[in-house]
Image 1: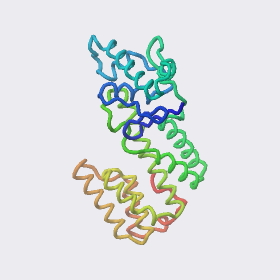
Image 2: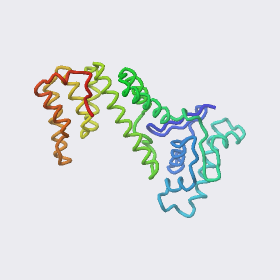
Image 3: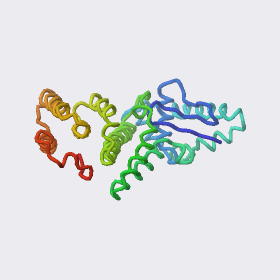
Image 4: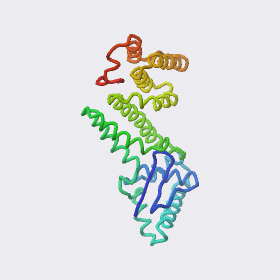
Length: 267
């Protein structure tokens, strides 16, 4: 039985190629909670808190049971109307809650975490080719912000924030690895997009400045710094960090270190 769970973007859960994602908001929310915790029991209390906040209604527990029954029906339909035992084996009832019983690698977030960890270990080993490959594979699993189409509560919010922050960190590491491999020309378009999407993130600006400088565009590298500084002063009331100011100074004077691919671009 093939199960695919995708949370790195809009929620997609399919069994034997058939989607089981409900159209109603709260059952979809429930499925998202089970999907992101696939292989682990999620207690009824945790589900109620996630869906209704810290003061669930009196009818919360019976309503959860109803949502579970409807999800099992969708599972049974996806399994071509087989005995409902198969659906119960996939969405398992435990004394304290429910368990979505699937292999870990059926969940894209699990695959992402594995590939991300491999890429980060490669950074520590100084293997930038492997870093770029593994992190590119990990980032290729994303289809947009995590659970982009699901109304999330307090617990999922933590998981979603972790995933989205890790994605930004892995983007930074992958681009830094590509810079170390001399791929500055190929990175210019991607970095222009990232800096437009995240105009106050120094790391992406620093990477863009180095890529521009190494591509023979020193004036544009300086302009990128000035643009970031203006945004930070205007919106945050702060100056760029000493690290970024030092990079800017090195670009202004044409310091040889900016061209040295063995040196880290950002800390």
